[in-house]
Image (cartoon, rainbow, N blue to C red; front, side):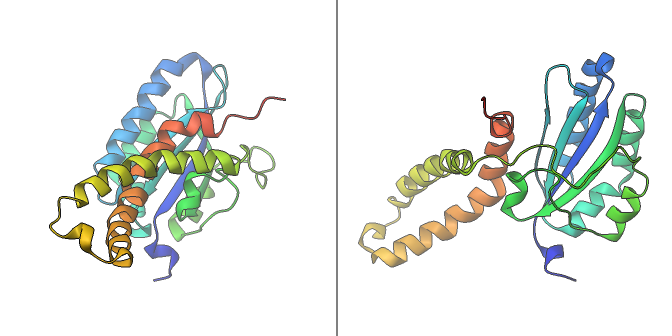
Length: 210
C-alpha cells in the first residue's frame, strides 16, 4: 500500500450536460451526492456550473482514502446512478488529487492513478486536449479567506469550551496550544474545510473581472 492510498482523495469530474434538461440534471447531481454521503469514508462533495447557460458541470467529492473511494466508485448504487443519467450527462474527464490542495487547486491539474481509475478513463470519449486546467486555481487570498472563515469559529468556540476544563487556564502555554491544535486540526480538515470550500466554490472559482 502506498502513502497515497492512506491520504484523503478528492475526485474532480467534468461532465457535459444537455442544457434542455437542467432541472433533471440538478436533481440527478444531488441524488449522487446523497448516495455517496452514506458510504464509509465520505468527507464531502459539491458541484458547480461554469455559467447559467453552460453545458460544463463540475463535481467534486472526497473520501478518506483510496480503499473507501473505490468502494463507492465500484458500488452498485453508483453504477445505477450513472446509468440513470446517461440520457443527458456525458462524463469527459476524471482527475484525483490528494491532500488539502484537492479542495483549492484547478480541478484537473494533475491526477492520482489507480487501476480502477485507469480502466474507467479508457471509456471516456476524447474531447480535445486535456492537459491544461479548465478552471484557474483560486488566488491565495481567496484560499486564505476560506480557511480563516472556517478556522475562526472553530478556534473561538473551541477555546471557549476548553476554558470549562478545570485548571486549563493554568496549564503552560505550549501545552494549551498543543492540546487545542490537536483538537481543532482534525475538525478543520475532515469537516469544516470540506464544508466551507463547497459552500464557497462558486466564489472561489469565479474569474477575476478585468
